Image 1 (spheres, rainbow, N blue to C red):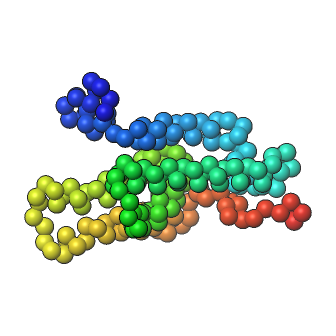
Image 2 (image 1 turned 135 degrees about the horizontal axis):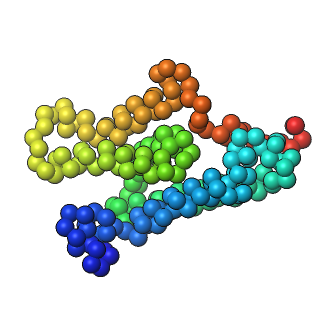
Image 3 (image 1 turned 135 degrees about the vertical axis):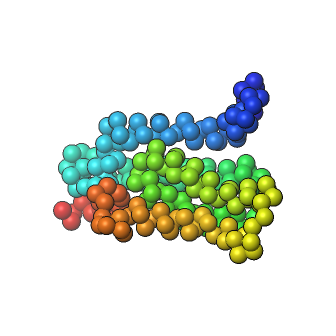
Length: 190
């Protein structure tokens, strides 16, 4: 808890009584946005994702860049896993993620590789996940079939969001995944 601020009625416990990793993640969003969209490193990253041959011709070490950012992404995923087991659940079990990795992949697609959209989407998905628990905690009487539907809401919402974001209704969107995502780069194949 942040002293003084956590005692503010209504907003204090929500905004100022969180785990340190929550505040780190909030600080990471503008820092990553600046890195990706306002620095030479970010330009090299986007170029390596869109057209690695052109970036290589410009002198960017594609292999080092891809490996470096993959390691950084893995470190952030590890930090998320640490938060899940240490702060969120405060315990460990074999099925701790219970399919949340697929929601994270859908969140990246939803965000279209933009940190601000990823933050907004993560709060939206988090709201959907916790909504089922809160409805039951407040003692709202629901029919049996609705109670069984509540744990499926995050996954149904994920499917609905992916349908709309990928442009399945009314054509393809212009923005989205980098052109060379998951395509191996071979310098000699140019």
